[in-house]
Image (cartoon, rainbow, N blue to C red; front, side):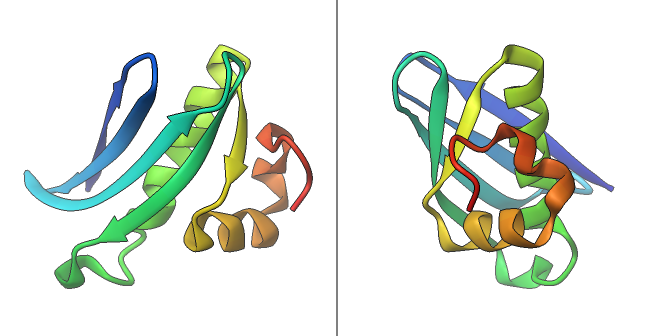
Length: 97
């Protein structure tokens, strides 16, 4: 099971994934004003590649955006590609990808 921990301050934040208590990945973002944030980096530890870790972190970011009325700008290649494939999460995009 993947658990995602969210950290946020006034300028930046992150979604950190853990699998069975072990660090599995990190997604970082930077605030772009009060209502949107830029996902700028996603990394998944090699041992967890292909296990949905990146997607879980992205879904946590989407959930955060929806609950707080925020929009996402996906500059990270992983986030951008996932948004292009998954129409059900595109509602939080600043501009359609």
